[in-house]
Amino acid sequence: MKGRILTEQQLDREAQIAGVAGQFVAFIDAQTGSAPPAPESVAQDDLLSAFQELDSSLDQLADLADVYGTDRLQAIEPLVLPAAALVGEYMRHAAGARWVEPLIDADTTLIIATADGVAVDLTGAVRASLLSGMSNLKTMAMRLLDPEAS
Image (cartoon, rainbow, N blue to C red):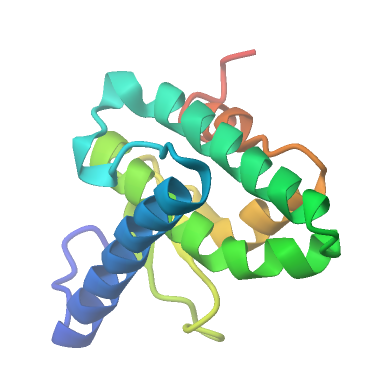
């Protein structure tokens, strides 16, 4: 699959995902006054700190929702897809991951394959992380990118 030529539709999908990720960085900045780095600026050495900044931003957004009395699930669900896009774009730019076209629910499911071929449903992983009460995407990334790390 590595040598597969991407179709125009797949390239459009990847451009859309990158656009969503960039818009989400701008949204976080507008809501919190600070934002995690843009995906294209994240190098491999900066990846874990980028995830840490994203975790902090997502926790801050969840706290804002609590302050305004929003149900946690209602507050989190609109963040899932854009956060998954940002996570995937970080992994794509800094760790050699690539987007995988899902067989079903292509509009609402984002799957990434790590450089060593591990496929991850980022939409589900991000949703679980956000529902846990404290975003832990940095830990997920560490486990995916270096399974030997403790």
